[in-house]
Length: 370
Image 1 (cartoon, rainbow, N blue to C red):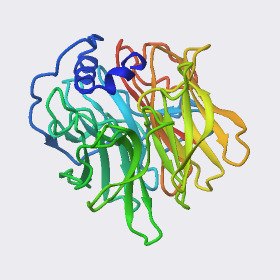
Image 2: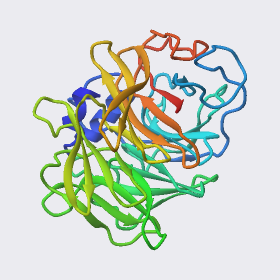
Image 3: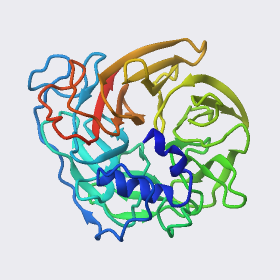
Image 4: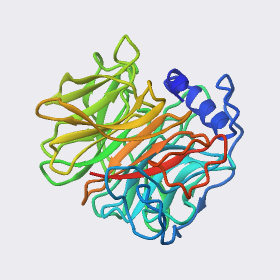
């Protein structure tokens, strides 16, 4: 999907890329897919057991150590973004299932079972971003292709009630081509959605905010130096970190920090996927970024110290033909969920050896604990 980043910024590109990748065709030069079948709601989710990536043995639960732990292979399918619930008991993720339907899925963090559909099909077209509410009662999804024609990816934000899976649009999020998002709380305690996208008038790239209950959207920052902002992370004090995969002329990503509307570079030289995954640790001392080690051809989780900018690698995955996607942290724990858009049969000790990676094209969801 690295090659498709430009297409994701164009009106028909989101729709075309999802349709072709879901079919494992790999042909991005297509038109919008035919109308998808109706949405299916479900609330059941994965069982117990599961194997630890580090030990390769059954039992246990959650992520352990600093090795990523594969919990939800989808074959053939595609995953975009993932978030744990508050206590990291479940992981919710956006993607495309084997039948080509885009939507939201859930799997137990203990592994041992296939992912269950929460809401798939219309109104979802290209659900790139996902975030969980603080109380665990709702999920929020950013879909830059929803509610649009093939030539006008106006986009929308959606709320999903749990556990039932009822989907409703978030008023104020329409027309902003929302991509990455996070749930934050203002000084008044009100939950707000902070998300990347493009302004309705003029189409300038930016970061925006809208009340989680719906309301008028406001711009946090728009225009240069932002080019194609993607994943976001929000500090308790209101600072926003946003990853822009196209902001550097050398083709690497820049992470910007937005303080009181002022945008400044925070980290550069990263190779990321789309949507870019980043999240702050609970103490906000560090920012985790899901990146790509091009020398190894593998994903890696990079820790960047907020105070000094010093970097270290928290975890690396197996070499594969994949691309890193979104990453989010559980509200109540330093447990991070992230996705790889597609993997091949290559598996090493960083990935659960009990998982079937035989499919040529698939997506996987991982857990990592600090």
